[in-house]
Image (tube, rainbow, N blue to C red; front, side, top):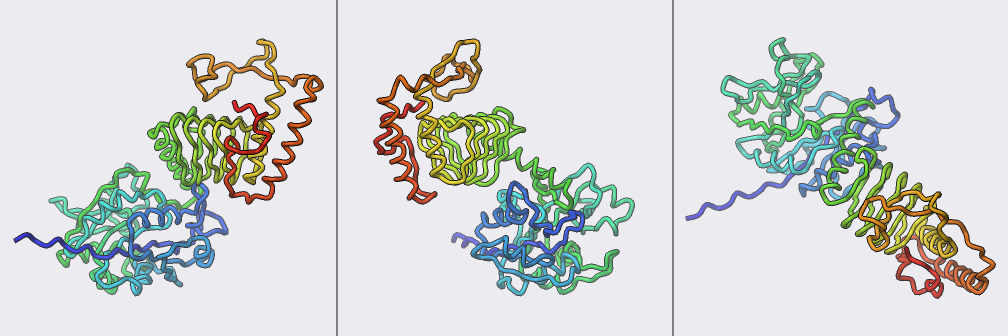
Length: 440
């Protein structure tokens, strides 16, 4: 007879977010400090949602109403910690909402880089007779609780720095605070917590010694990277986590085939997807959701927010575009600032119209810029030469100018009535004036 597969218990995630964050020196609660344009706790909740939990409990305290307003999710439950009596006391506030038989995962609202893949591995270690504990090895473990093991390498307990002996302070394996444990056992251990420590608080870490005493195996999981368990307590640490987040996102884009001229000068926030042969010049900010089609080029010092760009489009430097949908093979610029989709589309038209009255100057004024269209490239270099342009004498083409601008104003009147979020694919527009446009 084959053994029946063990039924997976429902997952409840508890996110501790009650800390005031005095070292931030800010009116905002610590978990609402921005990381890549979003609150710290939002990144943690995103990681938790990737695990498909039955419930996510957020324990809030200082600035609770601000936190509740800023963070919303369908399966979110809120628990108030009126008095800050320690991490064990904080988890206890959420336990009444945890279903019987649930598996509990404890996370922290100020540890934003934790990855869902790491949490899945941790959950595999927890069961009726075991619990998972996420640890890390640090060269400088100052300020962290130390993981104490016996001679055989088994976890015995966690001791906080204030309560550690000189020998225990030499330990470099630290407790990250992230753990996965059976809900029924956790409720029993929390009820037995005492405040016999330097801070007179209820330490959640004391349940490790209780688990060992109850013959529950504590299985440590070393964190794959130090970055994902870094906590944020002041603005210096916030800047360090921001830099690491930016590095990770840029690395992901480059692995996906995006050409980044300078990885240190690209800022990626939110969901960003790119097609093939996308090129991002220096000092570009992508504030998602952003979609870039195949062969899109984004010039230096551009900021794109909630933008969809069609294949082959060239965005010149110093453009700020928000909430717009740009068609394929457009040429955006010279520098524009757009907060509506219609304005971005109109600028694309004007750029194309103006280019119809431009002609190259002498080679002495030539400069180098990247053109994503191989058919127009003068070489296989990433920087084929292009030349400046000066207006032709418009009076020589009156038969072209008059009907062109009449049609252009008709198009403006037609598209100004459309909603900003409506599709605005200039390259496929059926307007009469498109025959005058010269798509580059």
